[in-house]
Image 1 (cartoon, rainbow, N blue to C red):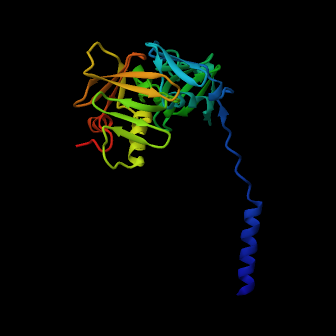
Image 2: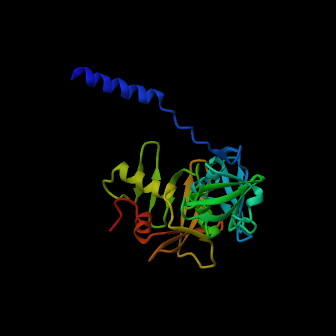
Image 3: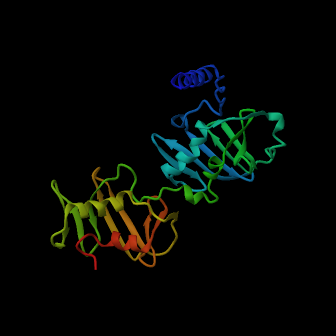
Length: 272
């Protein structure tokens, strides 16, 4: 009995050892560029320009349809196509078969063009033409191209590096000395953690959406002194049902959900 068991184990081991290994899956890289190499972006839908963006130092800015800071996360989604790999590659002569003569959308990064054609509903892939080859890629790469260029705009009121030291709201001031944040007039016993969360919302909080500035008169103004010595003036265009804050220097307005906006307009210790 024991001998038979050993024989079975030996036979199984021999089978595993002698079994041919599966060939490694071959994938095709679609670009030699890296996201860090990207300096310009041109997006089109149905042959019409949606947006143009350019990199200045380490920040991305939209130049068309308007001049404004771009959202770093949204840009990173667009640049992800540079690192895409495909299990299948077809010659450019098949472009018509994959509906790439008149592509649905295009991304041009530096000088490399990515044209997005037909979708394979079975494999959930989209056929993409670039550098004279057609590749089958994941649907997420085309999904990164928005239907509205405004969705590419930065959603934080303050830019990276714009660190606030003082907020002046007219009836009260929130400022930081060498040790801590405080409110004038005093808001009572408020923890520094609460202050830090409030300041972080102003510095890094994401707006519901960013839109081009309109001509409405601001209800009031907020003056912010930054660490670098600069001062910003924000216009409060609307408080309810959504908070709308205008940065005239950027020509943009940031729209925040009502509950978030109410917190931003009333620091800790001054909320109802």
